[in-house]
Amino acid sequence: MKKNRPMGIVRSVADRFSESLMDQRVLALDLVCRGFCEYYREGLGGEDQCAGFAAVVRGVEIGTISVGNLRQLVGIVPGPARRSSFLVDRLCRNCSYLADGCDYMAPVPVRGSSPCGGYRLLLGLLEAESLTTEDLQTVF
Image 1 (cartoon, rainbow, N blue to C red):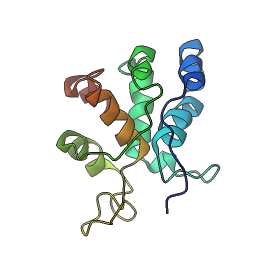
Image 2: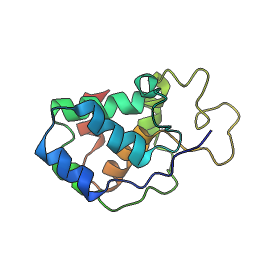
Image 3: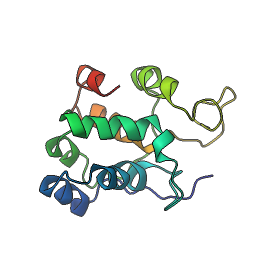
Image 4: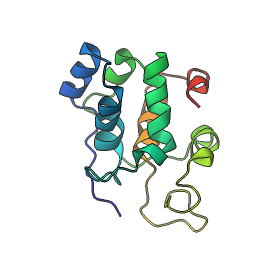
């Protein structure tokens, strides 16, 4: 059930990213879940099962995703996501939500469904040409 109204990356979150990477989990919640995920509900958890969340955390940890990459998305409110065979193959097919809870990848498509916030953020970085599929190979 969709509850969150994603607004993308706001400047204060981007600034905090550049100031400190000490609490990457909180940063990832801001970026991926609050910023890009329509399914996120504050305090209910679930992000640990999300492959999109894990991919962005890993990308930040290993330096594939940098503040420069994220600044490309500041102020861009996420719209409908297009299907990316690269992200579907590497991200969605390895997500624990695929088996019993992903409307986006359901065998019978759910009308109006959208992918997770990690998918949408990574797709935004690819579409902005801030990262390439080769760059993202390291996060999966």
